[in-house]
Length: 144
Ligand code: DQA
Image (tube, rainbow, N blue to C red):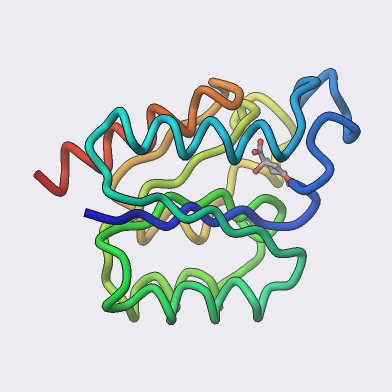
């Protein structure tokens, strides 16, 4: 059982970027949390991918087919804009969980819209980096 964790734009700047919203922990720490949580929730491997480019995220979703059993995705700002990421998730039809570090529903109105979320069976928001662990737990339960 393998999972792909996908992170969208600006998440590589975790720890630097708006720490009042996204916390003080770095992207490297997020990678570590995902790998540890994956091992503890029964995944053989968890690959963690980040890109600032919409097309690269679409490529990563397409290439997940046949390599991964499920996806955890934080599309970051593309959550609220990208039909291409939604369509890629629908195309590969892998079980997917949407995750956001912040509570997107409690912020600006434009953050309440989620395109990618329409192709995800679950959503985790506002739990900080621990939300990735929660998302991997939900994915593992779904795959068992
Ligand atoms: C985010 C929320 C998005 O609205 C924002 O554009 C991000 C990060 C989060 O994890 O809280 O970049 O997805």
